Amino acid sequence: MSTLLTRTPRRAQPRRRSRAVGIDARPGFLVYGLLTAILLGSAYPLWWSFVMGSSESSARGDTWPPLLPGGRFWINVGEVLDSVPFWLALGNSLIISSVITVSVVFFSTLAGYSFAKLRFRGNTALMVVLVATMAIPTQLGIIPLFMLMREWGWTGQIGAVVVPTLVTAFGVFFMRQYLVDVIPDELIEAARVDGASMIGTFWHVALPAARPAMAILALFTFMTAWTDFLWPLLVLNSSNPTLQTALSQLQSARYVDYSVVLTGAILSTIPLLVLFLIAGKQLISGIMQGAVKG
Image (cartoon, rainbow, N blue to C red):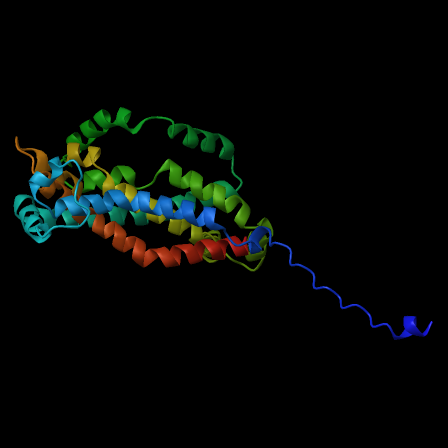
């Protein structure tokens, strides 16, 4: 009996920590490897363009292209600046992309809020018609749109590129789908009880809640307007081009210097990279803020 009383109790064995699941789980080697492969695969075309744009023209015929850039990049930059009206085209692209982005984001948010939270006759029918227009290819409307711009005397002017894209059906649909759930109806009713007008409710209630979606829409709209080629090529002339149409003149001759062409492609990509570096952090923080508030 005494031996039973004097026996020391066993030490409790520490419990093994269970693997974290859900939001607390840390990604493993496979996830990091997959993300690294995607990153390298996405960045390789841009790096290859820079390497070939800074090398001799004869390097493009090699079986294995060089992996390190050469020393002709700034020489090719000078050739690009001498061959096309680069600075005029850059200014036109900045003006067109900025105006289109601001207009699309503002009008899409305004219309999306109306479709999402305002009750009026024909709301659903108008939304169905709006979505149906997205199924029509843009190329089908180029000829009548060009005839209209020629009748108005806008051909050769940047207004002919800006006006047809001041608002998009996708932007309205995107903002409507975002605002229909992120803004409670009780919040709008409370604002109206406090005496806010319809515009005041939109400005003080809907607009702050829509900022994450507005940032995403602005980024994609700017990219689309910046890289647009077909419509500016048709409606503008060589004396007043956008950046993409101006760089297309580099390969209009019988002999095409691909190192110069790729240098021009790199120069046209730099503004987009700068935009991502400046707005990327704010864009991600806005998305996370909207997700937490939602």
